[in-house]
Image: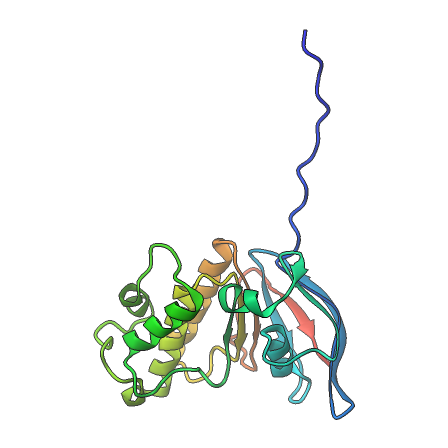
Length: 217
């Protein structure tokens, strides 16, 4: 008769993102922090705060564009490094990072070269998924502000980053575009990703009553 083996629970997965005592100063003046928070796979979190509260600055710090003044950032339990940023973190900011003289397809090909490609997707299918079928070869400079935003959203779909950092993702979008952003967020969360976003609009993502992080001056 074999001996019964004790039941051992599997180890808990570390948070997808963790900030510990995170703080940012500009000219010795505090912009935000200290902040402590965690985000898990499948979670959408809204950053709230008045103008000047540091919402955009926080996203820049989490994306590696600005170094934190104090504190620590961990991704999947390990310290965040520049080597991880290009493949595991995707930032969509006020400046979309598109090359205006290149076509939509060429911009997406450039993004794939930097950040890799998510399985079962292609630039063509990503553009179709954001409503830009037929605009693949159009130079981005000829697209409207809303269409440019959709190219940037297609880039989010393509790269295999698990963490999305979205600064005012609904800006320059009509109602259909706003609904598109929410569908993309739902899909990303279902597939095990997470997103941290800012928005001034009343139409900000509300599916499942997302958690909120409040920044104060």
